[in-house]
Length: 310
Ligand SMILES: Nc1nc2c(ncn2[C@@H]2O[C@H](COP(=O)(O)OP(=O)(O)OP(=O)(O)O)[C@@H](O)[C@H]2O)c(=O)[nH]1
Ligand SMILES: [Mg+2]
Image 1 (tube, rainbow, N blue to C red):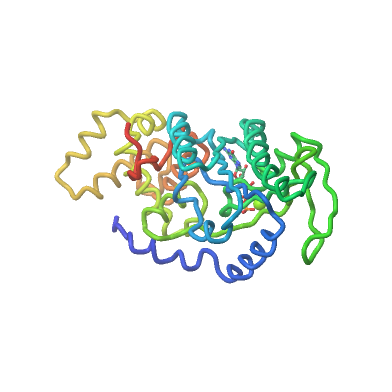
Image 2 (cartoon, rainbow, N blue to C red):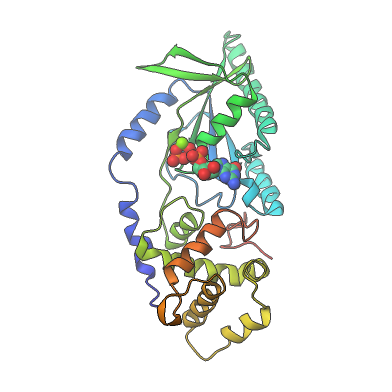
């Protein structure tokens, strides 16, 4: 297989065509009436799932970070990430918006943040004002799921209120907090191939047919280096087999590709002539990873390494 790494970084220009400037303007508009920003990140990639502009966009607002999809991430790393943000004075909460786990704790943290704001407002003589919150996050990070969860957990009451220029829907979280029901969709940053790959592994950006085998290849490589046991368990590979293949006298990418094909063989991705269908194999591996079937795996650790220490 030719390791066509260039593609991964270059094609990103087509991932989010058009509308970015318009979306950004709308978010800035909405932010005018917002007190608290809830920044949703993917717990598996808390850095790669950030938006480069967010700090500028929300200047002066209080922020809480929600590490969503925490059910798919490594539990120890989850705790380390919470500490990472809280050490920077940013409240952080682990949430699984699919099951609702962590939502109550998240609401508590929002309330705490809110108290700080209300104290400040009271100093200015403004009392009893409801706190307005808004969700910001990259595509597919779980914004809608989070809103549904937080709405169901509370009264699910949705009411109309005049917004700045248009009617805004507000979800009442409790007697003191209201959440804007339309989240701000921000684009992720593609500053490096590494970031682009992490976004592809987690399903944030869709791989094109051409890239799919490349993305899966890179994922297998990452897992061999960092989560070999989980990879072996999922696909019934032995460490002896892996070592034997990796030590073959071939370029490294040949050997890793061979292991990827072995996974395809085991999964019955065989076409005429006994060859392995590498696109089908790639799809299986990528879907398994996205759905947490290979295990709970965090791709970034707080100290900035590409992978976390095993
Ligand atoms: N395992 C897991 N899956 C989640 C979680 N939250 C959301 N998902 C899944 O992630 C996918 C995207 O969720 P959405 O809520 O649609 O994400 P979104 O941010 O609103 O996406 P866009 O509207 O496209 O920007 C769905 O398949 C959800 O079921 C979570 O905490 N854990
Ligand atoms: Mg959505």
